[in-house]
Length: 334
Image 1 (spheres, rainbow, N blue to C red):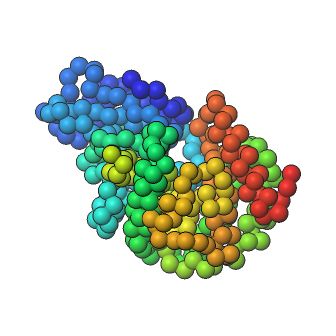
Image 2: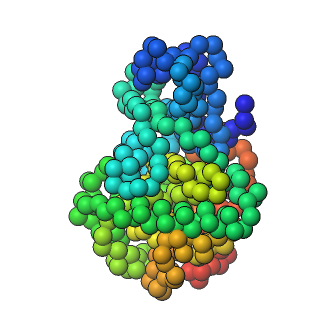
Image 3: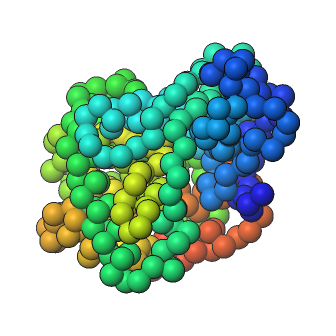
């Protein structure tokens, strides 16, 4: 069994529970025998995921959402519905490779959470193997990722914000994004998370620079969480991208591949990513937006450690340091 990351959000199930889910999705004839047919997959912090070998030998992946009574951040509610919708949309409207969804159950009859089965991708996780790749091979992977991300951003929506929530239909990107940041700040205040700054200082900073958000007028599909660890490769080629649960309609330069344009040590080869994406530089207003998006990301990275019950402080410490650096770019120093 491989080592797995741990979080209070991981909704692990018994063998009997997993067998019942397989039965519902694939029928009695595919239910495995014994107990060596299931393996928990690691390298993820939110949903629990299992690789399951069906009786006919096929491997599939089962993802299970957190239990309903586990407190999550505001933007993390109902993320599994978003992921299933995003996977379907990407497969139907682009040529970007993503796993096929085999079965989705939101009845909560077998466990108190949504779950779905999807195609198992037999490839290497780029986040795990990248240090073993040559700079040339890694750069090629990043270039391919940039091209794939550009293709995803060609999907257009009819509202800003969550894919499946158009309650803010008609709202501007400024209104939606500043609301997204406010949700994160309230999450932090609710759990008394020390972010190293007065929360109202962050609020005032965002308000002072929010006019740059008005340039964004077309809702665009944004993957947002497309890091190396959500990329599967084989022989130096991109095979699939994973974890679409945080997708939303917003500004394409919010994508993770652009983080390192304004914050160092957050990506290894942003130049290759941008070359694949087809961008060479950002305007001053775009750079300000990107710094606001980095601020939002780093707030999440600090605050989520409390919600997930991390006992290792490395992510919290790293994100606090980077948050201080991005605050400096806005003229705020400790």
